[in-house]
Length: 374
Image (cartoon, rainbow, N blue to C red; front, side):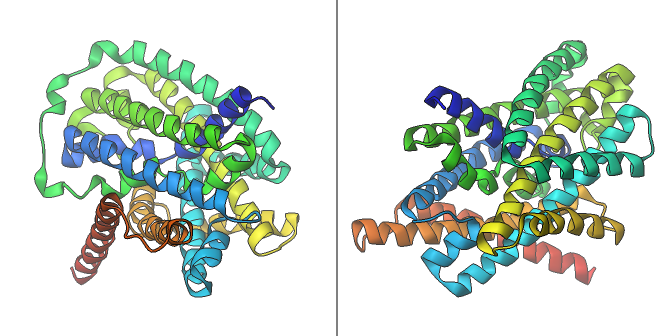
């Protein structure tokens, strides 16, 4: 595979993972806190997540053998921290897969006019089948679906451009300033697919280029999507950002939105499911069939026991789970630096990044305790 081909293949897989349910919560976050606050968070987390992704890539390149996140944590930080990484990985992966099934199944059911249960079932069957087939099938599907996504976004923008109301962008609600934190963090995170990118990109230069271009593209897409939806729907913006469009643009525009939703959630479900399957096979040495069964069965069990609120799920994962994972990666990179350069102190940017992550985790824990008391 040529470097150029591996770059586009790796970028498609990376964006196919990152562009998931997180993007659909951003317009609602703008409704709660204000558009410009969301843009600020997008700029902040585009930088933070790119930095952490780059650290992760350096760790992967410096570690002998092939692992996934728990395996890298165990190698650099030891067994106790590996146990923490196993817990956060499983909670994060299963919560995210559950969110994909909920939102993707909802979009699919609205698109093809079937019940939500049927839509969820079809989404799950198609996705789990492709996860079983493996990376080659997923990579090709990502390339095709992301190409379709670009065309659909352009078509939707043309349909809705005349309905923009820029005054919707002005209000700022400082009392809700922390609301977008977990949603935006979740939307930018692509750490789960980074070990896979090492094999696809084949060179350090292409590897790092995929991460940089992926961060820039994600920022542009998220800001444009939030601007487009929120400037039309304003205070009527729904939690998943699409249903409220029907009030302003009619059913045709909503169909376009559901197509976008199906594509983004489906590609992310495939990529994340495949990575979790590899974690079970590489780090826990389970069989291909056993790994696949664990990946696909647990989210359905969670769905059946009543976990249906996707926005709460991804906010918790973005703030708590990903915050802990990112701090573990900072610790791993610090250990790697010590082996490479000697006992030099961490850089100022590492201190700032760690502080921002700790503030997010602490604020979510305090908020959850207050809600429980109420």
